[in-house]
Amino acid sequence: MKRTSLCNAAALCVLCVALAGCFGTSRPIEYFTLTPLPRPAGLAQGPTGTVVAVLSPAIPASIDRPQIVTRTTENQLALAEYNR
Image 1 (cartoon, one colour):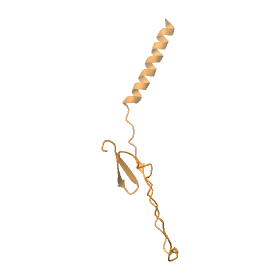
Image 2 (cartoon, helix red, strand yellow):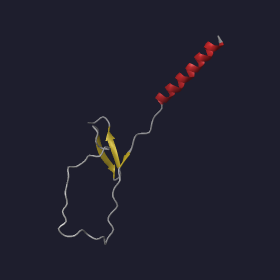
Image 3 (cartoon, rainbow, N blue to C red):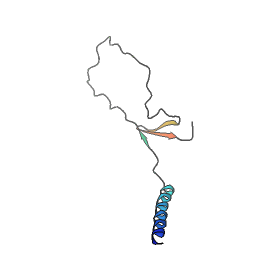
Image 4 (spheres, rainbow, N blue to C red):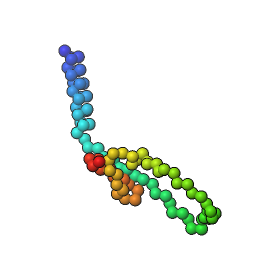
């Protein structure tokens, strides 16, 4: 009898803890980007006749997603979760 009531009490405690986790609120996810520092004045420029090759662009994984990604500040991105 005691063992059954102890198991029931333990199961009830586990159930309460599991349900308590479902009703809490979580902090919204924030995405940030980095911006390059400005080039210092007086830096040597490349020699004349420099060849620059432009390859196909690569989309960073942080924005390669079905949601709409917008820049909210210079270094922060926002995802429109339900707008696609």
